[in-house]
Amino acid sequence: MKKILIAFCFFIPFSFSYAQSKNEKALQLAVQKLTAAMLSGERASLESIVSEHLSYGHSGGHVEGKAEFVEKIASGKSDFVTINISEQTIDIIGKTAIVRHLFDGTTNDGGKPGAVKLKILLIFEKQGKDWKLLARQAVKA
Image (cartoon, rainbow, N blue to C red; front, side, top):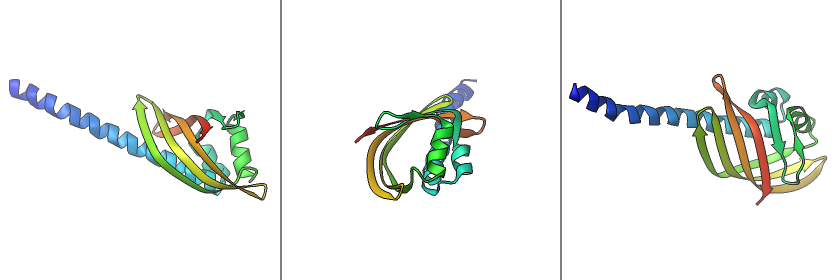
């Protein structure tokens, strides 16, 4: 019995870290899916990765919901040409995840080239098997 208890105590932390690692990989894929959707401007891709309750805060103070976020990018009003993500950290707490990273990109909003360098906070919520973007806040880097 003692050997079984010791074995149980030994394997539980490893199975937990494996589950955490699997969740973290899924979340990294969700961030990549969001980035790809922002670059492509494909409406269906954008809608599939964000929550119905999205609160999307821009570095200039403007806050928008899902419909406005999707429309701006899908219409080309907000057009990302390149996006480079670096220094990413992920913290998962149950069905909620906090992602922070540096966001460096080039834009072509309304035919006007530009550049953005931001610090980003993303909040994802696990809905079923998928991670959905629930909130985002940007500040100038």
